[in-house]
Image (cartoon, rainbow, N blue to C red; front, side, top):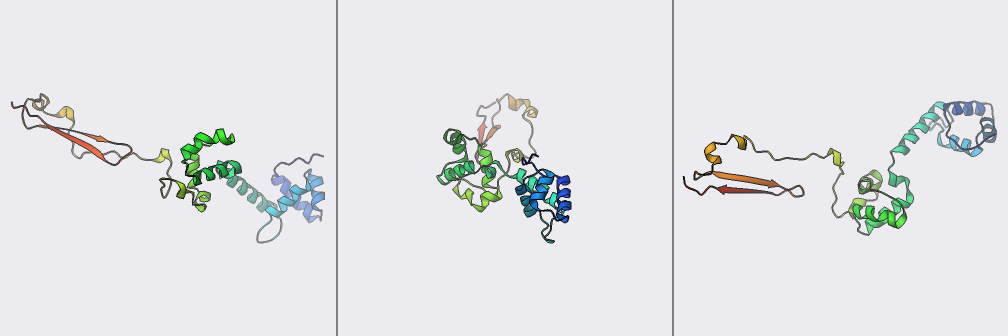
Length: 201
């Protein structure tokens, strides 16, 4: 009878419950349902009802499902010890996440993009280790790039350049001003220029 490990399902847990009520040992249960006795032992220890201190198949199934979902939500760095230790070590050496991304494959044969590193730094696990302290520029929270809003400056009551008077467009009449402005993506400063037509009509 095969005893290779595979995840238990609701049917298996119902059977375990019935066999326990019959007084079967963990080894006996494993032999009957075709699982190793260590699998049965682990199931009883991890999924026992917390308050009743006994094994119930329905609550055991809920616990197992919840644990499985929680495991999926863990980040790649949380799952890979070697990679996590490398990233943390380099952060402490004053490396930026982009520098780490550029060297990780060469040095330990693994890959991680810098955005995943930032997400780990600002995750609960990263906050417990105060990893953002090692960033040259850190923020209280980390927002995803695809959620960022671009703030565009707008001039209230502006008149489109196509609607300006024809006499102004010819630039032959003295006293009219022409302005232009530039906004920089990486800076808050903006540049504005104003030019006056100096030709007298």
